[in-house]
Length: 248
Ligand SMILES: [Zn+2]
Ligand SMILES: [Zn+2]
Image (tube, rainbow, N blue to C red; front, side, top):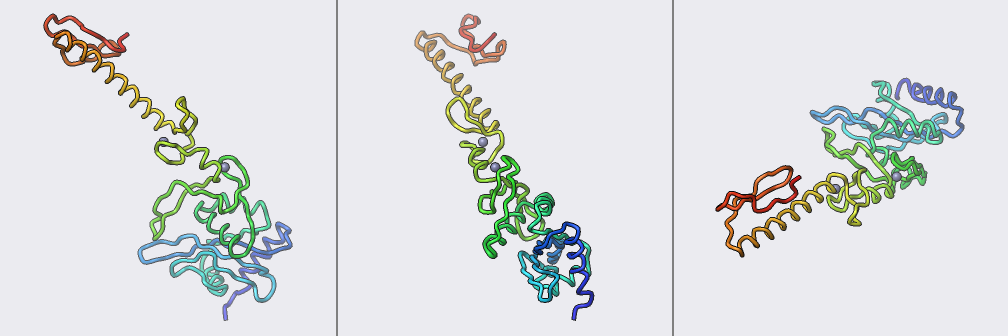
């Protein structure tokens, strides 16, 4: 028997009273995880009808020795640790809080679980375009290791925003991506790089054109050197400037 079984229910019931909702289905966010040499990480359960006997418990994601695989172990965790959050899935306010508080990978995973396993469709406003987005249209971004066994992301956006901000040069999502003069979609960094590369190519072509003409006339040229914001080259025999490119 689990002692204090009512503590968890009492808290949920109080929260229910506060926000006045009738249906009772809660995403429970709690400190789970706990591998060797690794700290806790957020785990998630879903509990339904906590007021009535036989409360339905669903394990959304549990990891390590602190992950709850059953209602009893969730209650044990609850009695051990105050790191618990409840989100009423019928409350827009709660869902917004869930979206603000939780990691983007977790948001997508929890939404996907609710949709795929229970047919509960939840939508989140895309952080960029604000359009309502379902889990299958959420694209995760900004990945890093979480210190545990997995890689997690730190942002998400919708599919539409993903393709609208997709740079055709580096093939990455970048909010600076826009249509450029050459009809391609590039991010700022790639756009700058491509502009520099083009300018460099044009300069090299001009230099070799000049060098070629001088060679045909038998004029020996010096190395190119910086000259008033551009470059210049000298006739070695006379010491006189033979040509300049881009000089002011
Ligand atoms: Zn969007
Ligand atoms: Zn790029």
